[in-house]
Image (cartoon, rainbow, N blue to C red; front, side, top):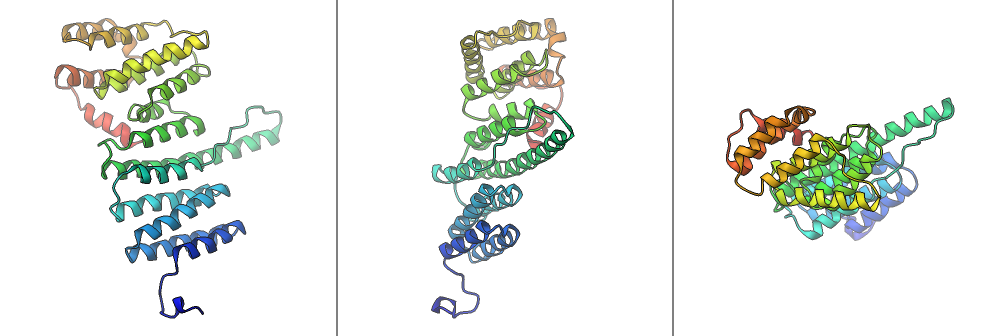
Length: 321
């Protein structure tokens, strides 16, 4: 036994631990390695050696994900964030890059599209289950990271870059796509151009009548946060990207009222705002959330107190994310 092990309970050097555990994972001893990642990192945390614990947990998350062990990788990724909290790490570019590195290793696997026999149906069922596990694992990790960032120096809603990551993963990997969830993260992100490209892609595969709702939802979510700039940027980018594909914005009353609303909010014109809500009520009523968002917009832009508890409804929307 080496001198470094003479004293009972002494922690081994972190790189030695990392090398040993990576060999275990490479040998497909996934469960045994997972338990050791958790127990050893906990010992470093107990000794307040947070940097070493982070190195071990990041290494473990990365190698488990590379071996397709999503549940194990996600668990270690969440522990990585919990250690950031325990170590009182501030939000910074360096820490964000470490979170992004883990995020980048979450698998992206297309769902089979062409089904010919019962065997294909079985493969589809398995693929859908695997996709659900991936999305739940990545979402748990990024939601924890968003919460940590919001309490550690990022904007109060959490890091915009982390919201962008979660929105992109939800859109590309969810077996049952929920565009409200996707949009709710994109509007708290920092990339209206990427958001526009996602909406354009969605428009190419959604059911009839869902395309204008997706656009209206995105604009209203931006506006409900008082973000008129990105709401306009999104519409401009949508038009540009659709033109490049020789397509155009859907023609509907809902899109019409969105255009009028964007122009109305540029000036102090609350009476016109009220008229628009009344005139286009049937279009606004196509989605329950729209009326609530308009209440929030009225308060943000015109100081009108909400008639009902939107804060509870809208807040709950983001809690579910």
